[in-house]
Amino acid sequence: MKNAKPLPKYMVQRYQGWKATTFDENAAWYRRLATEGQRPRAMIIACCDSRVHVTSIFGADQGEFFIHRNIANLVPPFTDDGENHGTSAAVEYAVVALKVAHIVVVGHSNCGGIQGCQDMCEGRAPELEEKSSFVGRWMDILRPGYERVQDVPEEHRARALEKEAVLVSLENLMTFPFVREAVENNNLSLHALWTDIGEGELHQYDPNSNSFVPV
Image (tube, rainbow, N blue to C red):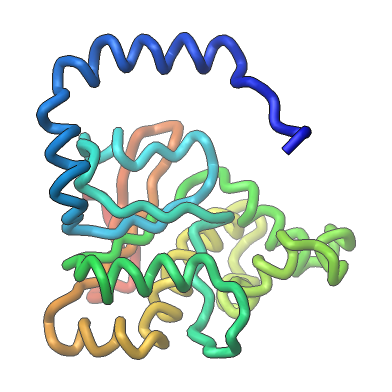
């Protein structure tokens, strides 16, 4: 592949530092992970945003979480059309093969994908309306969520949509037959979280109050 280039020097240096310290100090643990396989208790579905670092938020070690990241932490509805579905494949593997006990969807503040969805739904992003826009077609998943928050005052609408995206993902998870079966058999629980990047706060959805409350 002629387009492949060597890693940037700063990445090489960071790898070498990790290998000489963290890895060497825990070599037996890494070998155990490699030979025994992964047994994560939870799947985390989070945004691709580089500011969202779920392993740091929960102080997790390697092997604890099965992590899937995509634009705006969205889960599409179940479909068996035979096409390529990366997020759906990750959910299937987590539930059917790894048998995780929890799926945690984590939204966040100042999400660019969510802002793009709002702009698209409000007619300010014609480029996302194009059929050729991967981001736009992905954000179509959230259009039902936008309809639920479109009457929220504009200054609060983006944040409301960030939280709505998490709920839409949970609703869509329940359209997967194997997810629904696991939930109904009490083998799987679903969780909705939203984190404020600037404040370091974590909120979880409370179905009793139909709101996100601080953890």
